[in-house]
Image (cartoon, rainbow, N blue to C red; front, side):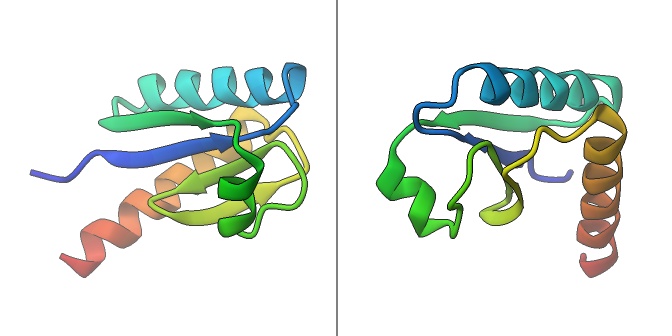
Amino acid sequence: MSQPLNIKVLGAGCSGNCSLLERNVLAVLDELSLKYDLERVNDLTSMVKYGCLEAPGLVINEKLVSQGIVLTREQIRELLTNHDSSVRDSE
């Protein structure tokens, strides 16, 4: 049984774009029926620890995969599908 994806949406002082990114991520996670833990990170210090200098940021399993843009659902689907495949291949 695979572990749930650890997803973080990063955004200090980023309300509209961060919320849109979070909604897009949730929609794709549900569409793909993936197990996940989602956290919203609003602390600037924590964002910088991930290397995120522009909000919104997206972290998948502790790896920063996007910053400074609101990814479309298609872009998120591609990231999650590729990530899920690489996890299965390494097991």
